[in-house]
Image (cartoon, rainbow, N blue to C red; front, side, top):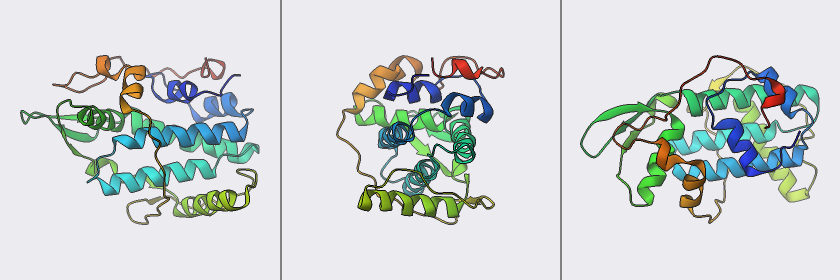
Length: 230
């Protein structure tokens, strides 16, 4: 299956169709690890542009999730399956959950997803209305500190030695909150205009600025694996 462009990973995350980790594993099991690594890294670089400067805990959590996923990019079945599990966990938290408090300029409060909140801030940077965003209720994300630490060391090793990505095995432990055991990874955002992404993704039509909830209904039906990459 074709999975090589930025739009491919965007389409995989930013839609209301549900799928399981098994579905995702079946769809991604043969994708080149270097391609998958690059797409995940680029996607996080893009969406984290929407994290407000004052939301340092949220910024750290997003970097920890990025590092966890990048550390799990590998072509062996066991690690790729774990990647699929963590990817689906991230998507459920990022796209479907509505736990970020957003207060508009008139003082009206609503609950939005992480994806919507980050987009509202990106729109603010482009001159749209400023929303007060409270990420407190989404910070308790289950994440294994060992995995994040290993991801950091693995990525740094690849940068220093130019070794192939994702060739190590993992000893997985229990989940802990990233907020309680923070691990940071420096990230260099690119200089792409945020407006290009927002226009391409259709956010200006999806978001009602008075009640910022994405249009479209949530479906409980699982997706077939052979449909995920199309």
